[in-house]
Length: 391
Ligand SMILES: Cc1ncc(COP(=O)(O)O)c(C=O)c1O
Image 1 (cartoon, rainbow, N blue to C red):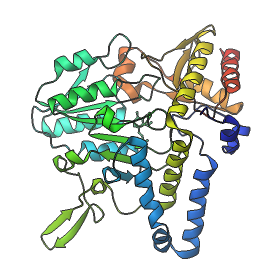
Image 2 (image 1 turned 90 degrees about the vertical axis):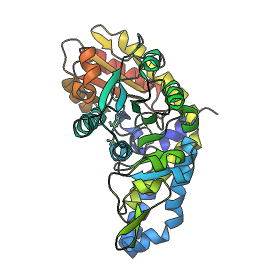
Image 3 (image 1 turned 90 degrees about the horizontal axis):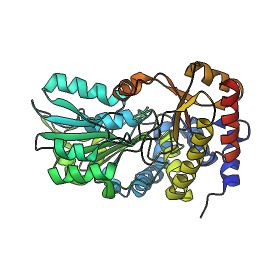
Image 4 (image 1 turned 120 degrees about the vertical axis):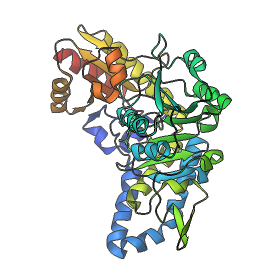
């Protein structure tokens, strides 16, 4: 069923006075997400933090089930952490690399991930190799097929990069990873919540995501999926008393599920907000969300491309809700600031966040306008008109 936009906007209070195209930064939270957090904060203030947590234990437990449903996983394969970076790092630093092990990644890889590759390569002697992009800008699956061998310990790919509408062919990469027995870590930070994600169909072993972007959850929330079958091939980089139990003076036992990647202290209110966000997204239907986002983003690209001096920079066969562009003679920062005065939110994406891709394409700072299903066709037209007036 198509999304009821009026209801979606009623349940997004800021939508009445703000044009928010910064959903790839942090989307606007809908009221049930805000309410879940406020209720729990009040409970903590009234009865104490530990006591409040005990009172909502079953609701916290249900968050794992909701995320599992979102990803087509099992609840025992989900860990709740502070953000996508912690999720990704916990997975990546769990892989034991030896000299000569190969890490394959893509050109549009995210800075934090690549920095971690560099650190681990320096420490262990593993080597980083970048699979080239094809003519459309997506990871070249045939090149990956040619490059893979049994020294490839890990394929780590960003599904949707931070700097544009590109969607990397995750399922095709997954098939190759499976066929060769390489681990596959998918950074789904920008794709979870904006398009259907099925870990079984994709064939990834680990997947990291954040709460605040396309899921419309609170800041400071994230999660990691780890396929049960690979759990014992991974050694978490640190363990605490949530991840393991101290069973005798010289021994601990790790948890048998993905929560071995968690740590104990948590923002329960924020996690309840995350659970509410996942349930809210599932309530609309991710396929419906995705259809609407892609239609709005296509409309925005078309309108921007028609403005003299504007160049849309997105690549990929299929393009998602992140739209990046430049305006001749104008700095991205100045444009974003000028729009802010008009109660229009968007963001910049700088070369250092996707250095390889930015260098290959000689990209300057980009304006990043990222749409969500609660945005409207009228907002797309207003945004394009505001850019035309500034161009
Ligand atoms: C592709 C990608 N991966 C990872 C991250 C990091 O997410 P977080 O800030 O939740 O750690 C981002 C954030 O913008 C991102 O765009």
